[in-house]
Image 1: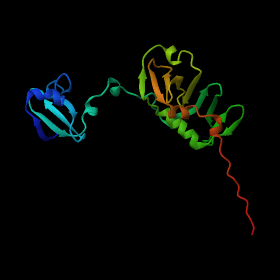
Image 2: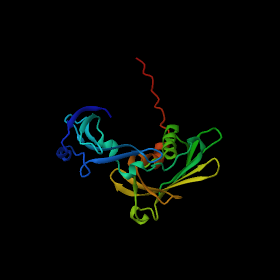
Image 3: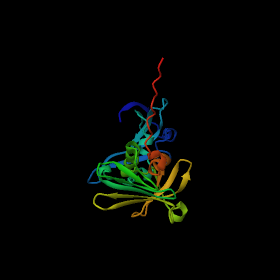
Image 4: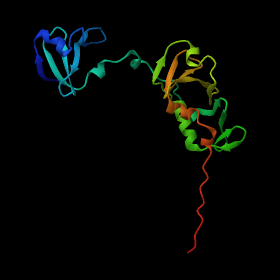
Length: 225
């Protein structure tokens, strides 16, 4: 952070620039020995909105520096939490099963094709399968939820995804109720934490059977003139 100019040296102006303990964001940066490398207050945005007022601890001088710094330093606790739900190689997946009212199972044959097994069996559309497997193998949450499983529809979920890997291990995802119009509650079977994922992620995980069917190419009839 570089000084653009000195805004004030008047201690009574610290409240105006929001660089005090009451209104500012206090930032302390420590080294491995817990010695302070920096200690300062992040205040309000500058007049052009793309700059920020800051003040070093112990100094009366308020300076303007380039950059929108409040979003950088004013992070909620959940920002620092690991949002990874699943992380494994898509190539290690042997089968993908959706346990639901209209569930199905995807398995790979000797040719490397994905076969969807339901009332009928057919070779599934590779692009749709890839989207589904890419989503589950690198699934990340957008938020966390705390409370009893019953609140989130996860005590007795009506829907579940089971992925079997080459080593025989299983990755199981319980799908709960809707949080709002674009988010859902989910939970790994082997983990107590409840996560929130986006609707577009769930659409790929719960893709209906009809979307896996390959669209037949329309044959164009030749017209003689």
